[in-house]
Image (cartoon, rainbow, N blue to C red; front, side, top):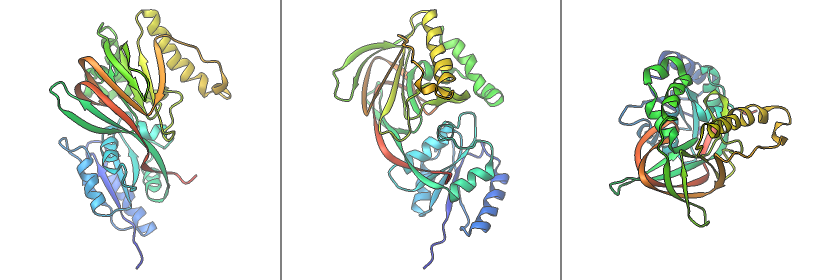
Length: 320
């Protein structure tokens, strides 16, 4: 019996032009001989995990996440370890997984064609257990970055209306507010089998990918399929420290390393940026702090345990 392939579209109705997407999908279905796509809408209460599990139960061949980074993260959480491919129809301001995989961002027809006809690539994902102050624990998957401190506060301070109008530039306003905050994180940090260390920093970020909006390369050595997590602690104590950190991130990482032969250029050492890699990180805070995963706020936690899950997510990418 011949198998007729079928896709599911898990979509945020606020983020996409449903009429345009439907026209494109119907044309591809007719051209490629696919069954009618299963449309599954997200909601504020369920940003994508439930619809993605429904798609898996229906036995579809690919689940397309149509929305912003939050939709992609939620769908990836449900698909992790299933072997079913994740297709990406980027929308919103970040689109960080698509950016880090070098996928197109503004062509609906091309993105959907890749989702249906592309090749499968296995990438890593991060699995984080958040420890809450009341003793509760919650488990989450992320595919780009997770962090505590400055970056999480920046997200909570970002004006949603301005974000819709100005995109990533809205974060600049939030940054200008949070960098004035004198609070720093005090925590105990244990990486893999190393001895625990006492550390203080404005923020700590654990990444599976390295690139942020505006093509800013925060974690220059991060790769989505290297089996390790890249970690950076940002801890400038003076204005000069902030200038040195931002210069390294924006100039050295973002520009110099992308020039021909730039990967061979000498790397400056900035005391306010501490990089490391590992497979398992346990962090315990002296005081609770805000957390973000793939750009979405996840409230306050007193610590977390995070590990890499190598090759656990299959993503549909162009054949070439």
